[in-house]
Length: 272
Image 1: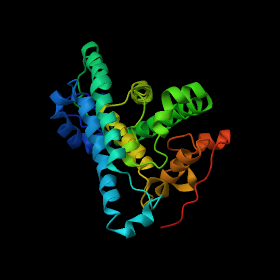
Image 2 (image 1 turned 45 degrees about the vertical axis):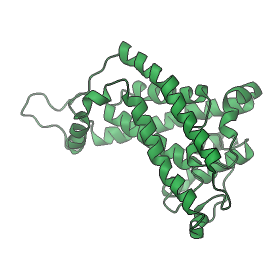
Image 3 (image 1 turned 180 degrees about the horizontal axis):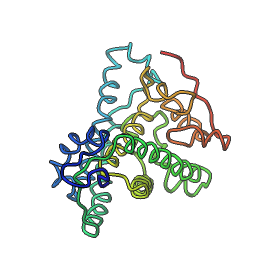
């Protein structure tokens, strides 16, 4: 995004733009890495594993700290190493063997430069919200279709449902077609809206966090669905119910599409 309020050297940017400029300047100091074909894979894996690790540690601690179980949706379940390692291995394999070649091809065909100016704060927030709503709509349609058409479910989506009780590292335990579809939704949305690179990074980080939280199996007082009012956001118990019943709660985050199409099943969650 260009700085429309900066016509000549001595004209200042808007206060919203100046607010994010130090952060963007710090990000741009890593420009060589960010613009390399390795960055999308490194960024995706490190962000994803970084968000999963605290929940993996909590699962281990639950054996020695029973008080933690009050926050688990399934208090008697903890994933074993035989469940965790294949999930982690699948994520690493798919990113190295499939995601990296695609990003390498995109890097070769579409070289990019980072803008000098940061985005305006309100525009960043606006675009991130729009990206989330678009992604929520796209994946709702994809998800509903892959549950309603038996061949699509068996061929592409069944893998994600192999763990009836979800846990953080199972978030990306999915077929390459599903992972590819989610990646396309991500990139199409930021391109369609003309998002600033900092906005795109913010959206990707938030999207990864929300998906990991939805599969974590932990319902904390500060979980996202408790922070968003009026039941607009489903959250971890909402998505866990989908993994248990298969025929409800198809939207990944928000609840409006499930309400409109009659597929919403409210999750009964005790207040912690």
